[in-house]
Length: 178
Image (cartoon, rainbow, N blue to C red; front, top):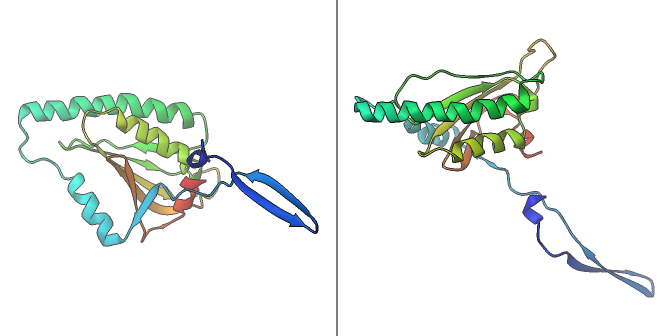
């Protein structure tokens, strides 16, 4: 695993009767989940302020938000499309015309519930000038025409390099760690 990269193997010895075998052993332990699961009340307390529209924004702020929203779309959509457009994955980006540092999408396919998806979104958000909140509705519990999706119904949001999920949701968040 990446977390163990560069670590020296740990010495270990095993005894077999009179013989003693010495060797170095590299053990890969799973890193903690990248998604921090919050209790329902904590999830909403953290998320809702981040998606609130800015009341009466100055014209310059309005312009700044929409220019950067365009840049985010120019970076994130092609990155998602490059990986999943030619697959059976189903997803869509939402149109949000509120003035705020928030964007969202829906994921409807189990195959997108993986670490690679988290990486693509985080790399895209890291290229933005402002801290964006990016919400993902995970609706992977339906037959989308190619078979039943099994991950469940859930949601995550990205903010300042961290990812949060709602512990109350019926979703297999461990898929993102595999």
